[in-house]
Amino acid sequence: MSDYKLLINGHMVDGATTMNVVNPATEETLAVCPRADEGQLNEAVAAAKAAFVSWSKTNIDERKAVISQIADVIEANAAELAQLLTQEQGKPLADATGEVHGTAAFFRYFTALDLPIEVLEDSENRKVEAHRKPLGVIGAIVPWNFPMILMAFKVPPALIAGNTVVLKPSPTTPLTSLRLGELIKDIVPAGVLNIVTDANDLGAPLTAHPDVNKISFTGSTATGAKVMAGAAGLIKRITLELGGNDAGIVLDDVEPKKVAQQLFDSAFQNSGQVCIAMKRLYVHDSIYDEVVNELAAIANDTVIGNGLEQGTKLGPLQNKMQYEKVKALIESARQDGNIVAGGEVPDQSGYFIRPTIVRDVTEGTRIVDEEQFGPVLPVIRFSDESDAIARANNSNYGLGGSVWSSDLDRAYDVANQMNTGTVWINKHAELDPGIPFGGSKQSGLGNELGMEGLKEFTQLKMINMAR
Image 1: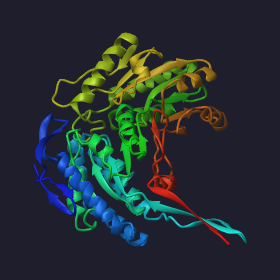
Image 2: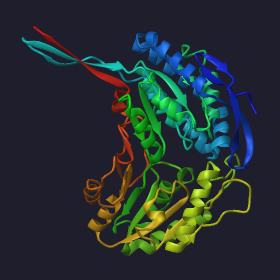
Image 3: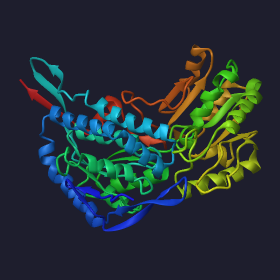
Image 4: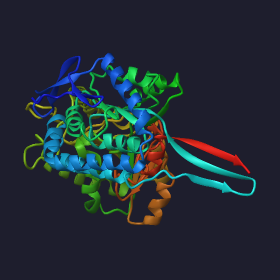
């Protein structure tokens, strides 16, 4: 029950009101958290706007030094932040520790990038230069599944580029962000980074605020559409990383026992609460039964529990709303297919659902067509490779996908036909700070990570000089 506060203009301040943060493993109140009102949001935006004047003119190497210091602080306090992350998010402590250290690594990655002036032409008649200028105030909206690492998709590139930031974490996982704000308040110049928490009521005013120049949002497709509509009136820049219903295609030349654990982990990491988790698995008819049996065996052996307990492989669903949604999807799957592992809700406190494998199911059912965002995997049979590709592509989503085969040339050909922002071969859901990431169709707009992700936080400005 630490005394958490908002970070506004370099000061730790109380919220206008408070709200409870629940530990999803116990359903008990973990902490009382500040809740900002619209007035405090406006104060944070005003502070960011004022700080932009000097921060945007600061040498990029000085900005990088600040980002490096933040990474140092994250690493120095990794044990505390990981413990807090497990308590508010639910994931096992080892996974939370990996996320915290990954956050520091993502911060450090962006300090190696530069935004040099690019000379496009230098001739007798003219000189043409491409400059990358900061946009201004960035509104960064982060979800509850990876509150630390997804924040690191946005904050470091925004600050490196010379922007200032108002960060809004999820109402159900605000504590690690607030604690980080407290740890770095004396490192970051006042107003450059502000952190405000809400009860899902400040997203719209942040998005529509006339002094916010860009929104970087990660979350559901439905909410992303609202962000896009809210930003439209001012032609505001947006980056949207939205929902996915990633398909994995397992070809007939795969050895089930060799890939089963990888397939399972691709679907069930963070209890399936991953935007790029494998959410539909297409398996060739000749190995279908064996793959299903292997996955079911792994699911039945998986230890679920409180993320702070040793041996826990999967934690709870993060919040009650998602928990109820996934339970309803399992009940529909029970009618539409055959549940061969899991499907039960343990008789204990916490939002726990055992990892669930559903077989003999196909398109046109909720568990296949919708994004479950939980520990449930439908396994779908196919016999024709082209048919599997067409069925995998027949979705409004297009975030990621994967192909599994012992023949890389064959897998590459299939991967090249999948309509997604990323396709992995013989792996799934791998992210690297140096590799751009973004979705197609209703899975997003724009890119994060890599140089492409950094450029998303800039305005391209051309200087064209006659000679």
